[in-house]
Image 1: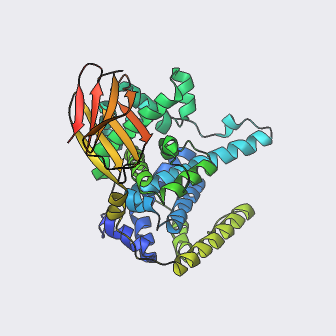
Image 2: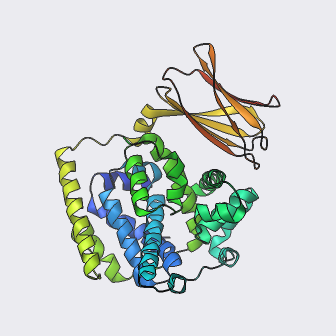
Image 3: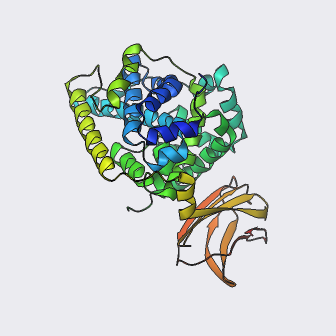
Length: 184
Length: 205
């Protein structure tokens, strides 16, 4: 990733002050990473870039909110980009269902998380996941890498939904602690 | 302010909420310091997972959209529906921008805002570790535990000016993790203790 010319906190400050150059700086720093996240979900370059645009557009509109200032720009953008990409998939699935097509045939294929995590760039993530208790690891791998809903995970594992949510919460908290310095 | 969406924070971060639910969580957390902190933690966890994605260069046409984004122009390369959406978003952005201008206030450092709403306390003792977040007026308590005794029941007890008050109890998960939240009567809280069924305890101070 390109080195930041500004401290992350300074980038947040400039954004909240409405400095357009800060948005461009955020795009330069995090655009490629957000694009990878969106492409992973959509497997289509144009639609992935649309999701990235949506996220940066939303960042500009929500730049004064507490979440940007608390979370920092990178985590905020990554989640909003991924959510925009997932929402695109959902919209397309609904449209396909209305038109009587089989949405599963149109959806991008899901890669097994094991193969995905074998990539060199995922070493840190793999190590952090290994540190999680098995039940927590199972939830985040299914939710993030296989894009299963928490409800689906609950049904598949015969685990109460509340327990699945608790495991997700604890796993994300641990991952945040383990990998936070890499975020920005 | 709407009810705190504690139950939806991880669901949102993992992309499992529909558009309406996601907007509700975001709008709430953007104005609520305690939820902003909890959501930020979940966002950081998901962002950590995204390290596995690597990077993917963006085309120059997409890069150019920024010039329009912050001047509230609609984005490029879209069909008619997307144009309408973009135009609507731009209109909303313009309205929000105008409202912001009219109500412009100094930006409060988030740390100050957060600490004016609640306090963190690490608990000592064991086994395991735990943290409590307390509303600054004592009106709610949020407990997060890790490495606690598997499936053990813990009572949460507060010290309120020398008076011991039992808040409630929770069961640790099989992996020793736990989260619990209670609303309660406002008032100063001088200490918190988690007491396990087998006598184990974690406490602040």
